[in-house]
Amino acid sequence: MATIHKIGRRKTSVARAYIQEGKGEIVINGKDLDTYFGTDVLKYKVKQPFLLTETLNQYDVNILVHGGGITGQAEAIRMALSRALCEINQEFRTVLKPEGLLTRDPRMVERKKFGQKKARKRFQFSKR
Image (cartoon, rainbow, N blue to C red; front, side, top):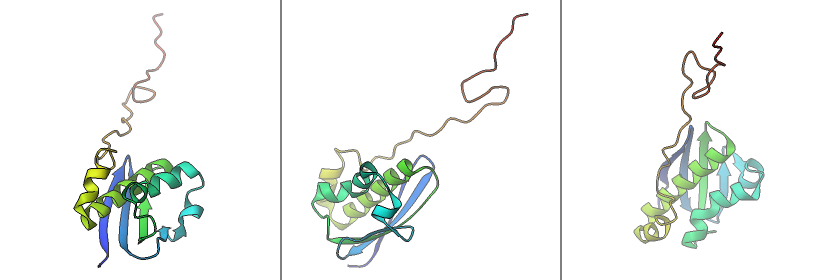
């Protein structure tokens, strides 16, 4: 099996996942999964596609991710891995699609407008 390359996005985070058969090692930006993500919730988000498809220790994954915060990065990685697993086996799509792992979340931060404090918040209005 050759290396499969897929991209996942969330907010401003972009994750590139390179997946190939192996022992289940997950390397993110040159660091181990446990070193890169401190909390168990974020580690679970990264491993979720493998847990749902029951392929936890079958693939080695090398991930390059940049932009955004750690939660957005974890969700971008999850999407990239889900897309890669669907390319390996089309039957995984029926498991991953209902969980929402193949759907790009379109929500982004709204831009700040001029003459205002933030995107929606205004400066205090004074009548007199």
